[in-house]
Length: 263
Image 1: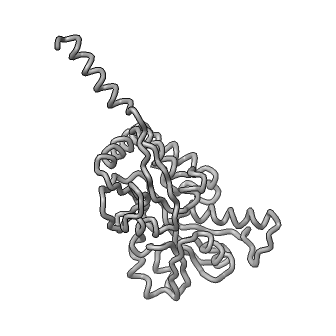
Image 2 (image 1 turned 90 degrees about the vertical axis):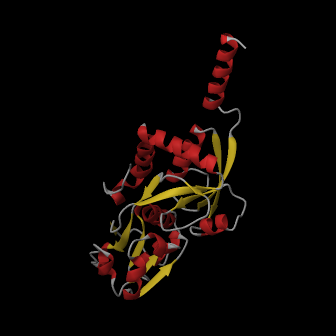
Image 3 (image 1 turned 45 degrees about the vertical axis):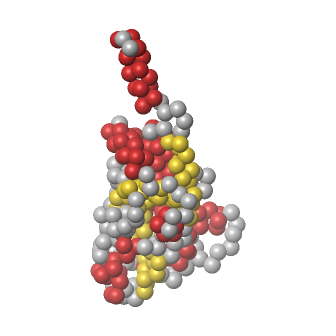
């Protein structure tokens, strides 16, 4: 073939690797979970996933479902190439990615309650609400559950905030950004003139009583997982994931302070 022809083939191969000819649609089941995933496809976690896949020549097509059901639907093979937001304690068949995001779960209580929550032990004999599948995710919750007055799992975070403001539970166990966003939504409804049976302007105190939870993706195709892992590593090395996190956290700074992980 000659040196010139060989060089052209090498350049063509390198170009094909660097610039994929066509972005592949990757259908992803995600939880319906503002501010991690908004209905319009934006959000803290959505942005990380989209940027990592785009860097690898793929394009996410997100399908939001209630939290917890996204794991079940993917396991049952309901038309998706991947599922997001999979913690270490949840076993799902497929090719698991490296962790790409961390949630900061903890306890949210009313300031007026006087509760000082530093661990699950401080919630003994209290009424608690949390997200679907929480006993698989939050360390020690399954063991502490018998000592609680009541433990309810609900997929909709708006229910969590509603029940806390209405005095029907004593604490929420969930991610701080998610609690802050749904508290904000209820306050926005009040300011818009909606008559609520509770006051969502009351102060809520959040304590991060759990270590940050790392979440991964699970893909059906290991090759797509491998591409995603490489691009996540590159985004992390360039500080891009931290930038996305800081931008997403900033609107909730008054609620989260400096206790929310950005790396």
